[in-house]
Length: 405
Image (tube, rainbow, N blue to C red; front, side, top):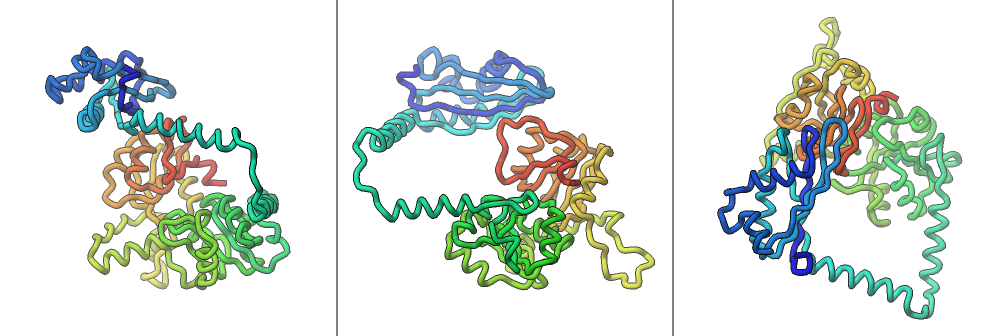
């Protein structure tokens, strides 16, 4: 079958319990039986050599099982895609609840062509005598090496070599941003490495003219708010909406820094987008979050219209720790909802207003991470974490201890 297969179906599964390989194979046979009619019954397709054996890899940890399913197919594209979709109908494996998701359908012939191309590239690089060397390429490589070598640290955080000596500093999110700015000749950048702003960088922002240069997403909005609470910013520059500083061209970096705005006038990108959508009618404004008791204005306040500022992320983490509860927070870190930690998966899945941050006194499981990523949650903070089979890049995962320090 491997010699005649045209496609390989790759699917991932997560099971809320401990199961064996035979349980997975049995579920694939049993729960797709009769679903697609006799022409696409798995046993008949295997008997006629149109479908290969069901290869299963399964591991178990922390009371969960996870792994992958691979099936070789010599059916056509439509039949193969239909059969792959049928696998996602599997809802139980053995006695346990399960989720099956098709990762990809691989064209075996395309894979072979890729192998040929990769081997050809290797032969071009190694099998021929080297020709003339371009002087510009050599100079560019040396310059790049020097720039990367220039990266240093400020109190343990990635920084350019001029952060200490310069009167101004550019505060970015991560090491890759510092490297990008070094590549473009900007040597006074320092990275905060997350939404929990280090005390040393907060103090630095008060001592120098500080510009925050952040990604054009909700993560950048969260860092901007945190810097506003613990530091002192003079200016704010942002990458274009949905883009990261580390991926910007020299021209875009120069434009963003040249057009920076005073910190007092800077608005979060996510907020600006939602306001624009509400104005032009393209989206319905999100429901107003329930006011949290610890963020409500005091009855004795002289000004009834001024609400107290929401707690910081560190304060939310401290409040949730050892309480077996979970908080769903919006972009401004205001509480949308508080639920028992055991119900956090369903709360995120069913939330009318998608939370930007979830803080839970619970283990972050693969299931919780998958649901959060599907809903668009930017950050998950839990008591501890499982080992993940796959981890979406769009959802940041940390522990309560990390958020409190």
